[in-house]
Length: 248
Image (tube, rainbow, N blue to C red; front, side):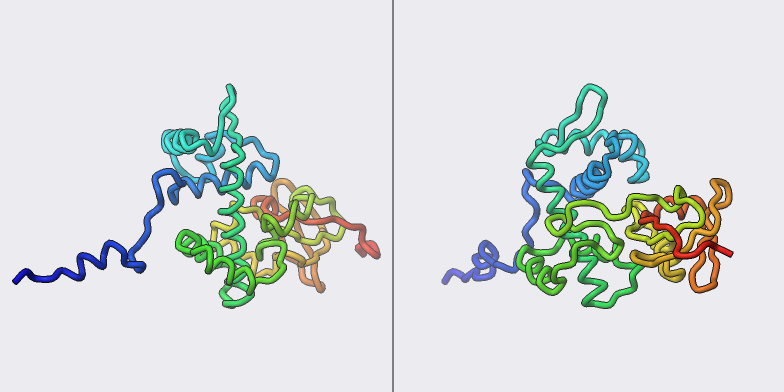
């Protein structure tokens, strides 16, 4: 009598089986590049391979390889100067990636109460495995938040970046309200921990006491001064307003 092989039969239709990305869709690495291209495009910065290599911390040939893959899949185009632009399909895919990442960050802070400086890395781990159904449920828990915890806009919830002045360019004797932290800084968990421990976070207000291109920016809050380096000041963007009363 022939032996039955039920396991083999079930494996063909087992709903628990892992589903890998199709060849026509972006790989995890390509999604990373789409995300970075989206950030640079949204900030009106030139998108070239050298800039991508600098952000990713890789050699130019690595970037060239991935960029060619994105071109082959019709997500991006390049002009004669090598500047990268999205196709409509590429923009939609990148927007989807960024939206998912920032909603996850919001969820990790607002619902899971995770340490603020660790949420970017955790969101990166989760976003590749998140199903559309889970994304919808998480979005409901997040509510109507318009930005990620770092102050950067969630696509579909907020149209533009808040904060038009970079801290290292803010004039002295003005009130500075932090609105956002640039995306590159999010990837440095030690820097994010430093910002959190010193309350250098979105919606925090300070008085700019002094500013130096060599030594950084001195801020005052509740009679406490802190001087941040030029490098740290460059990642903080916000709004500048006149002081209610002059610094004595």
